[in-house]
Image (cartoon, rainbow, N blue to C red; front, side, top):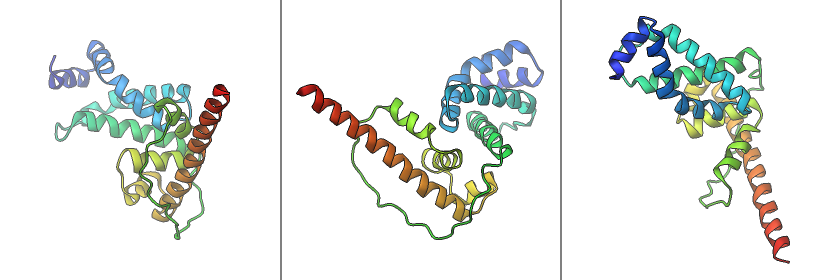
Length: 184
């Protein structure tokens, strides 16, 4: 079934079409939810809420632009709304940020461990990190999405990166220590 036909059937609230849409996009959107959630269970809640919003608003999709992009935007906004409702973004407005030097090196850490480190970041840092680094939003766009200042976005990114770097270094150092201990 073509996507356009599937969208039209979803707009008519056909349950089989909604199920098919879920089956096509749920895995990809769940991966997106994992980036914005602190754990697997929260990601499940976010994906469920996102699909409810998608089904309720599918009539608003105009056909202009990418349907998958539209789905991703709703999914990200759903995850952000959960955190906005928790009032975690009432932060200091810090305009002066020291950016860490860019480091181009390969790290010895699995993708799963890296995702776990990102998920363990405090909510406000994780959100900004994901939006900026992984999804390519600008600080201006992040500020608007999260109802914070650009300076706060930059500050949260810098702090998130610093915490993430520390977590990754601990994993790398514990891995090399474990390897050294095993070789003895």
